[in-house]
Image (cartoon, rainbow, N blue to C red; front, side, top):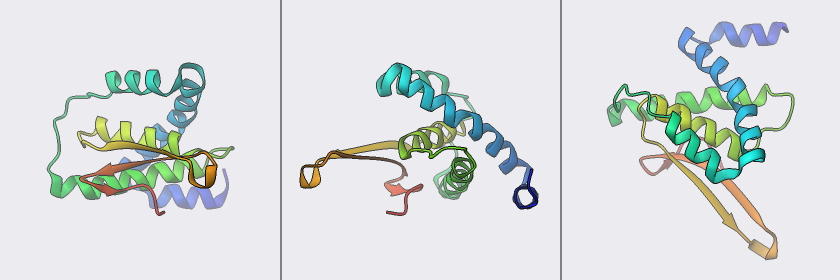
Length: 134
């Protein structure tokens, strides 16, 4: 492990480290499931696995928590040996938030601007995008 990666890990709180080490294997697993079973079956399966049952957190706290989880999932995505798609990253983030009791929405947009197929995925909480800058 490089010195730079060790410095990153040292800056993370124990909870953030645990979240990072949860997100890293989830990214390729979600990707594999999407390839093998498609979006609908992967989504349905993740929904069945999501309810951890700690109850929903108050909105005032959940927004900050959601952005923090999004930051950690983005770090995990950048550490993969391949390019992580917005769909994969958004599905992992959405699922981790549901497991934490944060009622986030997975949004998938599809269009055909200039007759070219385009798709994008992101996560929203209370109508605000939490994992996409553009």
